[in-house]
Length: 267
Length: 183
Image (cartoon, rainbow over all chains, first blue to last red; front, side, top):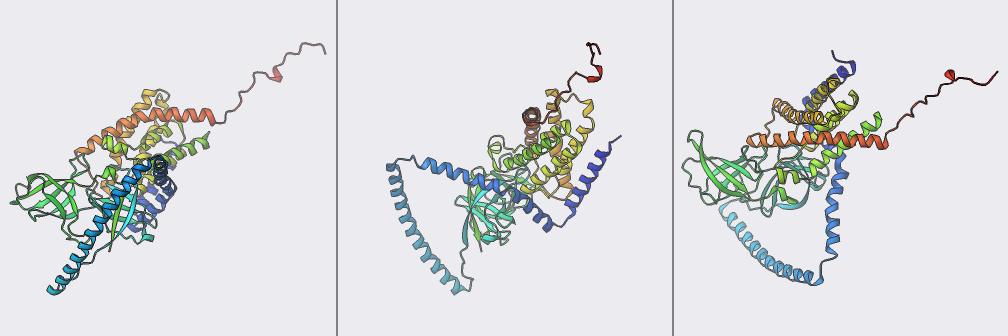
């Protein structure tokens, strides 16, 4: 019925797949990183092409526009410098007060800027790849943010690149709190939504007084994500589990489709 | 032709996987990323031999999984299964006809994501599946249907341009020569 080459090929593929699926997770992750490193030259090419195009564009920007932009940035820089000085004074005061009540002083994290070089080609995961790896001090489970809010956490880390599990990926759940009402919940993917910017905030108390528009931030529980990082905004609420608890839909503040640069929070 | 076909198929698979991981515009416009590997495997199954089909399914699947959060190897089996079935019945298929290629592409585009999900779920993973996945599956099916005849045209052109062709044997045969002069 089947020809000899077909039987041989099917046997080889079956053995290969069964071996690949049964090897330990760490070995599998290493193999994946090794295989994906075959694409590094292309990723490098793709990330260097836009700056080259930008440089060409920059060459034709009029001098008056550049001077105007420079003046605006100088003003903004001065304002930010003033705010940073105030924030530093407040931080020192906060540390002093923490010491008085016997709390551990607040230790600000270090931030490393990374560029998004790739996205998950499969539709059932939400991950991106960044151009920082273990040689830059990255480890798994570090928070990744942008000025707009929380992006996700680092997953497997290679030497020169790392995978970031985005908020909304099945493997990235975030302990969250609603700023206005202090209700605690867990942010998890919303499988029903086609829109990747919508996630669910589950396990909210039945009697919670959350309203659409309320801000959702990280609660700091779990230890991976620092406290008070913006996640999104409540869209609507509904009762689930036969009225046992409330679930809310949350619109993320970070637009994943326009994600280019992210900050990794190092401990 | 065999080596050229294998190399061309692997190069296209390599670039296709990289493009899927780099370019985000299908996600922006269609809320889904299109995987072209099923269409490529259908082409290989229709016009190449078993070792080539195996190489495309194995390497394409492994490359795809390496750039994805999929466990390594889950994409290989569905791709190979599609290639195996099409190759087994290819003598019964009017493979030169564009509509047959389109229908096979549709079938492969529908079967490969379902097969991959089945393997994925059997490994204990919990991928993001919901009503939105139906739309993604539909787009993927239609895209593979449209891409299969395009791949056939492209590889035919490649073969025509770079492929080695044997010279046709001349009709003249010495043993059948009629000698007209007197000996």
